[in-house]
Length: 149
Image (cartoon, rainbow, N blue to C red):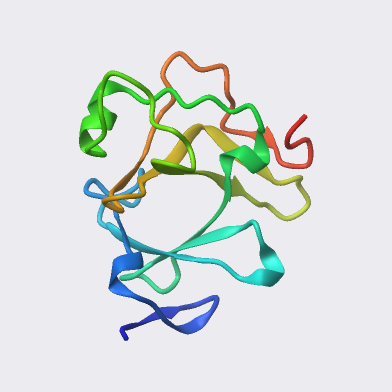
């Protein structure tokens, strides 16, 4: 079983089929294309997205439905093609795609979640991207403590 190096978690064993592939990387980290989701029982429902190539790069995320129970996905046709999903409808969160909000945590400030541009991963192909919501009223700084309200 392969092992990745993580600044936050030390050596972590993972299965190759658990890797998320981001063909274009993530905004600001275009060269980082392979991430492993890491979940720990003590921090659930947080999902850590750990870069396979950069031990210091790990995104803290939450499933969007944890942050906003009635979240509606609105992915562009181009992004749906990139994800290898049908273009005529939005994919079902949890059944067809994993949809994660990247958290912003700064010392002395309340944590926020980016609902405007969630990380979306096709559960069948493990291919992902950060999808900017089309015609959205969601914020990139949604208060996490107000989640689900």
